[in-house]
Length: 207
Ligand code: PRP
Image 1: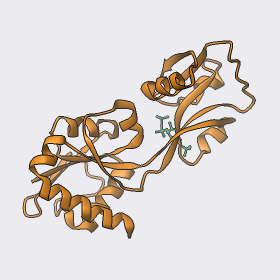
Image 2 (image 1 turned 45 degrees about the horizontal axis):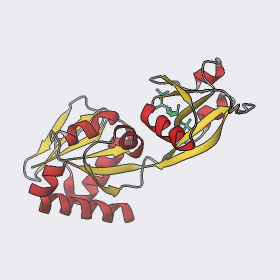
Image 3 (image 1 turned 180 degrees about the horizontal axis):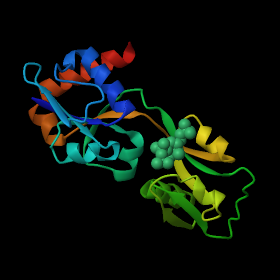
């Protein structure tokens, strides 16, 4: 059996369709169901729906053999797993954004609002810039609008949220997409099954 952790939500549903297309479908699968586990004994797969930010935790601890996590989460949490493939979906960008009329004053400590504390710290450490992190859990865009932060480090997908709040991108930190990750022990002991799944998924990505 291969245990696969999928991110709950639209991305997870898309990833499941891709896996089903690759021959790893599950008769018990029901779209939109609240069930957290569904398995297919014959096909040798078991799926778990988890919060997107938690996929790598399940995989790192071996509760799941493989999983699909965004590059944003991997960069932030740096889990001890192998990254096997870029699935080419869930594309977006990690960016620095601020109010359109914002001008940087390098003589002052920069106040950075973000969910991605480690990403932001690493980015500004490289630039040699002093920052103060304001950790938020969502609606990050509000912080500069209310004058609580100078900039935000956040995900930009379509750019609509920034535009509707009169903010704009000042720098791109890295590009994001969904990645197939694997537990290190599973990679060793279930290598044939996991390599097979990876190859078939890569063929689906290329379609
Ligand atoms: C994410 C991100 C931005 C938005 C970007 O938020 O934090 O706010 O999506 O998407 P866009 O460029 O297409 O507008 P999410 O919807 O995950 O909610 P959050 O505010 O709770 O983080």
